[in-house]
Image 1 (cartoon, one colour):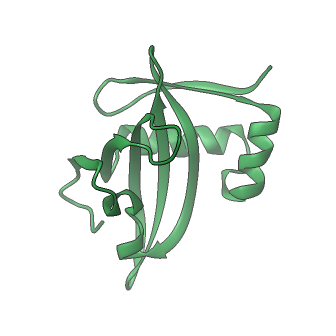
Image 2 (image 1 turned 90 degrees about the horizontal axis):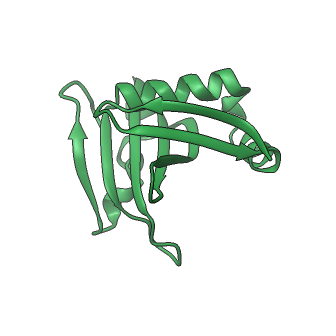
Amino acid sequence: MVYYEDSFVDYDGNKVKIKWTKELWEYHLNKHPEIQNFKVASNLISEALINPSVVLSGKNVGKNKEATRCYYIEHKRDQSNIYFTKVVLCCSEYCFYVKTVFAQWQFWNLVLQEKKYNNFNEIWRSSKTYL
């Protein structure tokens, strides 16, 4: 049964959906308390999809090699640390769906985790980003 549901459009016009069960919502909320509630989570997702700093596309590693897109939006910097939001989308046959969302501080060269994999490519970069 769907507990948290919303839909979005990314910077390139792709339709994105989120349909999480109560268990999945609670798992993400416990792991990433900064998402706080449905409204905050939807705002984080929408902001990153509409106005990303960097977008990476590739295949997820592991047993589920799904087509994956990672949207990063840089919010602020403090010396070498960056506060950012990351939204991970996977692609089903019909549309993109949100796999996870979170916001955190991290050392600048550790933010774009997918860059260490050969199967991820940068498909969008804002001219204003430090990432």
